[in-house]
Length: 290
Image 1 (cartoon, rainbow, N blue to C red):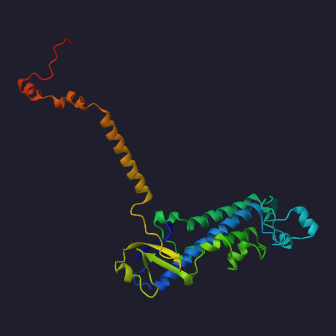
Image 2 (spheres, rainbow, N blue to C red; image 1 turned 180 degrees about the horizontal axis):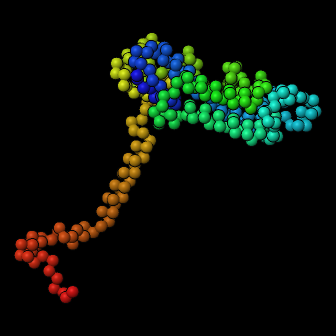
Image 3 (tube, rainbow, N blue to C red; image 1 turned 30 degrees about the horizontal axis):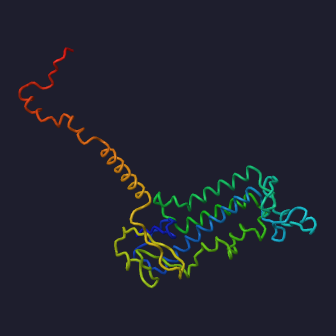
C-alpha cells in the first residue's frame, strides 16, 4: 500500500493508504471526501461548543436584536419552546445574539464537550505524527458520535435553521464564508506530487512506480489554483538546529580569537624538553619542600 501524506499548502492534513494500482480518478475523489469530511467535523465541533454554552440558534429574523427590539416587533421564538435540553435549561446570554441563551445543564454540557473532544481526536492532525491513517469510515464515525450526543441532549431535535441540524442533513449554506473557501468540490479537486499533477486518467503506479512501500507527500488543490509550492529541502525544526549549530560555532571561533596567540606555549604538550626529562627520569620533580 502506498502511503500518502496529504497536505493543503504547507499544512499537514492526514495520512491515507492506497494500492499502487488505484485509479487516480477514484483516489482523488477519496482524498477530497476525507478532506471535506474533516472540515465538516471541525465546523460541527465549533457550533456544538456554542450550543453547549448558549443553547439553540435563534430564528434568522431575531438574530442580533436586543430584547427591547424583539418585544417591540412582537417576535417569538417558537422553536425555542419546543427544543428544550434534557434535564432543563440554564440561562446564559449569548453576547453575539445568535443563540437563545437556554443552555443545557452542567451534566448535559459535559456530554457534548466530551463527545466534541473525542471527535476532534479522530480527525486530528496529530494522527499524522502518530502514523495513523484517516479513512472515510473514521470521519463518519466522528459524525455519528456528534449526532448521537445532540440527540441525547436535545431529544426533541433542533430547529431546521440551526447550522448543526443543517450540517447533519447536508443542507449547510457556506456561500460567502471562510469555511466555504476551504471546501474543495470533488469534481474540481487535484492532487500534486513532486511538482507534477496526478492526472485522473492514469493510475497511481504510473507516477510512483510499483513499490507498495512508497511514501509520498501529495498536495490537494482546487482546479485552477495552479501548482502548489514545493516542499522545503529541510524542515523548520532542522533549520532551527542548523542555525543553533552555526551560532555555537561562531561563538567558539570568537572566543579563540580573543585568546592570546602565545597562551598555548604554557601547555604541557608545548614543552620541547618533555621527552628528554622523561628518559632521564627527572619528570615532575619539585625542588620545594612539601
